[in-house]
Length: 394
Image (cartoon, rainbow, N blue to C red):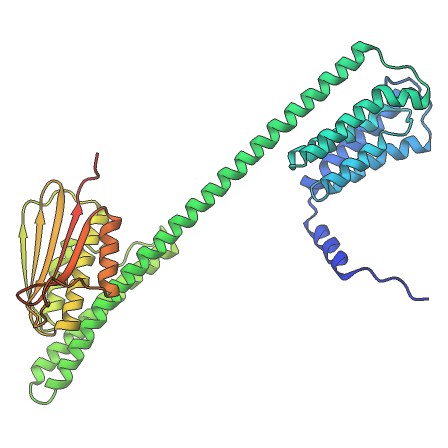
């Protein structure tokens, strides 16, 4: 005869539950409750109990004292089933009332787990059974009114405590969920910021390298000195890109012990950016007006990246031409404007650029509370203009 084989799904669930069984969360409370019930019943001896006056204890009584705590081992996984098992424990005419402790704990656990109606229904049934039906079934006296009211008061206190615990647990879960959502949002914003910086750094420097490489190839035979200058510019641009990439990767690793390998990008490094761009064959003029107030780091970096991306677009799309960069400071705003003298012209109204680089610049300015416009000028060329607030609005 072949032995019955357990269903694969049930076997898998049982094995999973055994792996997640926790001594602290699953076994500690039943063990303590078992000890209290057994010791309490042994010390009570032959003395009658209010709701279970039979004495002495027999084998069934001791078994019932064990069943309740044993069922509570799986209370987290099956709160309703455990509730009714412990309810069944209080039905027989036991010689000790200590078996009721397991039922009280099961009611509390089921209510906190969200099975409130099951818990309160079982509690009401147990109250009616103990106070009125059990005396009729087993022939012992009905408890006096004072004891009945006292029991009702304890049960009301149990309901209030269970509800308060449930509400606290739900609020704590909502708080944890909110914190997790905030953390995910911050991580998404950080990834977006890093993606923008990577686009700016890689796009700018690779564009310069591409322009210089093309120039070097064209001048290699006829003007070797100019070709060497192009190669030096390529070396400088690639070194700059590698340093900034190392800095970004170090920040992503969140290693506080590693200092940045290069200064943070900002308007203080505008001259370096201009020199690299000039090496690509562009004629760049810089005009700064106004006194620079203390700039927030995000605004300083944002302005630098907007200028960098604009110069990259000029080098990539307009070719060798003249570019004018204007930086204007005042107490409220930082304004940057990049004009080039490319040959492209707008037909009619100024066209607004729709490339990913311009979209990224516009999003960067918007994230800082500012505005950015980009489009062809009527008299030829292209203009990028951005206004970034220096102070947060009060």
